[in-house]
Image (cartoon, rainbow, N blue to C red; front, top):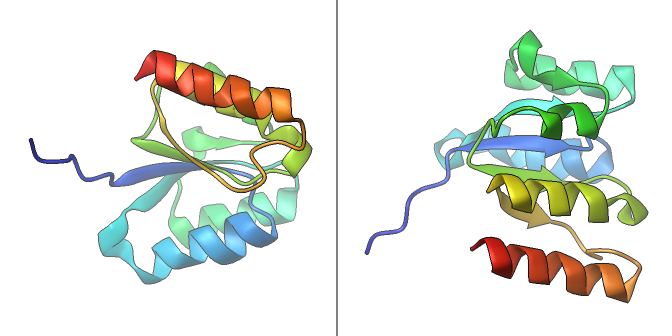
Length: 124
């Protein structure tokens, strides 16, 4: 069975790692996919990411909850928020069927790490 190529992504957290590492990579390697939505509370970082990736206005959110309240928007999700804020979006994204790219640490709480893995295994 051939693996489906992931081509669309959403980004939660357009800070140092989200915007300057993951988003920059996709901008420089468009054959690997593109960001089609972003959730970022900081207006400047959010707007900069929107402009650099031509993200449509209807896919721009100031809060990750707004993004994950929507139907699944892309193949995969990058969760690049602060470490202590990984757990809830990871669980919600798994339950929506997103492939998840979750930077380390998954969570500073070991129990939350285990729950993220269990949720993903249950869904898959």
